[in-house]
Length: 389
Ligand code: BMA
Image (cartoon, rainbow, N blue to C red; front, side, top):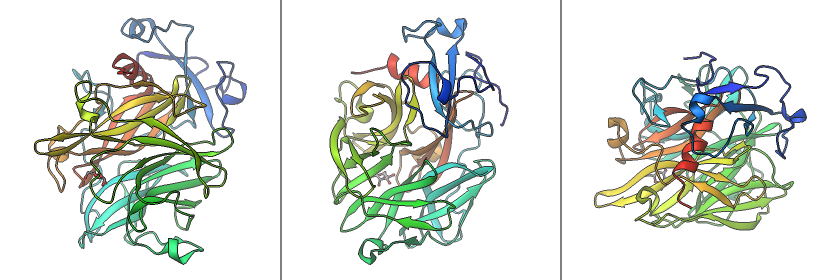
């Protein structure tokens, strides 16, 4: 599970060395986040022939992020041609991991210390939607606190807990920021930060209700915090576009820009009803790699799948490419059968810039949590090859 071999179709310049670290890299105008590293990776001749990126050997892909050699991992199964493949031991988090949990899904994880930490959506047996902190050595076997997160909030009115679900977690500079769908006269975007996953400091809600799927970028853009969100309604929202907003202080948000609408049914039906940002976008030289969910309204209800898009680095509301095909759509039993059938809903990913590996955490049928794997350069290539723009 933990081998450090890169994808066989990739080669590395100065692999393991720091020659290409962000502070000194010379490949294009990538903005630099001081604590992260840039590893410049390329495609070898054999895989290059299969690509439709129009790139040649001198065009390299850079991926921003801190090295993560202990990323949870399983190689692509033999005979599998999918860009993203599922972990054979899915689900990694069962519904009853906690004595009182009905289901644990749509949850967020990040590297933390020598292992990993996260914020987990646990619906209890009263069917209340609560958030819990959890820790893991390997990103697969999780210990989730039985007690819910109690957010410290200077303003009682905002801090009064109603419900919370679908968290995302991102490290920006020296803090971990949590965003989630927070009940305040309807769903809106809650924001908090922590340094230790023990004490959580709650800020103002980012927006008025109704809004969901608030996802922060991992660095400031144009000197501001940057957030994707999805305005919605009080119920099961039969519409939904992704928007971009900026804030100097995480309290006052503006510079709202439209990013993407659902696709036309005839063009890409899995994302034709509504869409929402998934895990924290990943910075690459090809743009921000965004994995997002899309919804199809079938005769038997909603079907949640996920695909990928590339957003402009400095103007992330400009979409450079968008996958017409899904990466993952409900197929396995644990995705098809559960409290809400046919849901695959990604809220987090881990990535290792050195090997190009990505591990995606996704909720399955609103009941359990699954893990899927891929290579970032291949997902970028997939996004361009199936582009519907
Ligand atoms: C969305 C959210 C998610 C859920 C999905 C499918 O509107 O509420 O939490 O996974 O519906 O039920």
